Amino acid sequence: MPNGKGWAEASVEQLPEHLSLPKKTLTNGISYHGGLIMPDGVNLYFIWYGNFVNGPALSDSVRTQDLLSVLFGEGGLGGSPYARINSTYRDKTQAVTGNFVLAAAAYDYYSHGHGLNDASVASVVANAISSHVLPRDANGVYFVLTSSDVSENSGFCTQYCGWHSHATIDGEDIKFAFVGNPDRCPNACVEQLVSPNEDSGADAMASTMAHETIESTNDPDLNAWYDTSGEESADKCAWKWGPVTGVLGEGAYNMAAAGHNWLIQMNWENARGGGCDQKLGGKFYGR
View 1 (tube, one colour):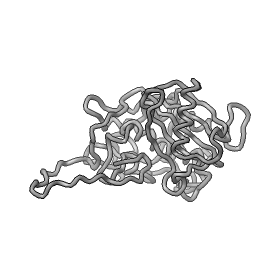
View 2: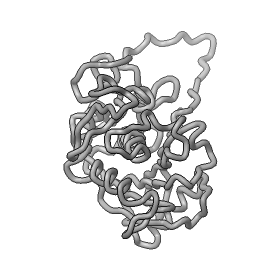
View 3: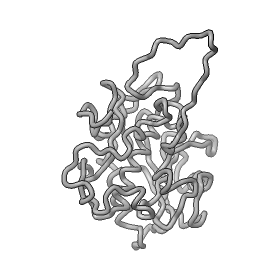
View 4: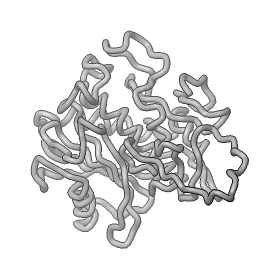
């Protein structure tokens, strides 16, 4: 089963010897396991943790915030042909639309110091909600976005670049994600040091955040869509870009959105046999 971090173990059930295996069911390479999806109108909430300020720039501040806020704001990635790849995922009653948007942001100046773990990431989200800095929204995804001087001790830079999960906070099932600034470990989490928007940290975060947004909406409680290896849809296409404009490593991009060019990993389309796609109904670039 998935754990939201892209390094999961499959759950294998043993059949009694006297029972034969059922006829293999054809899939698109990813299967539904009964959980709910987040179909429409998903609100994103950013918690800028660490060396970010609501005002004059510090080292990791204004440009990174501006770029990512534009990409996930109105007229950005939400509802785009890329995001609509997620419309190929559904639960028992409805499908994902791919509509999401940045609804609000908050700032947390090292409330848990420079070293986080999974529990403290959840605590940062809970504190923002309980203090009414951000609303309690069961149809939201709360991103804890850290500056490059912050570690996440469960495996940031060694086992993942970001992750998503959920927890009961103030009586609601709240979905949240962690994405660290990859300037902390460019060899692990940055595809190209020369990036489309001249901010390698923000540009690399953009792809990881797209990854976690996609999975948070089609597998929010880690019990809906994943394959036999425990990989969720974006895991299956991690570090796969498809055709790019320019030279990879020298500012290449594969998408234009919100007035900028971006290098965003592909997502697994749950149709036509399944494959990594840059936009809904496009050409597959990997199966």
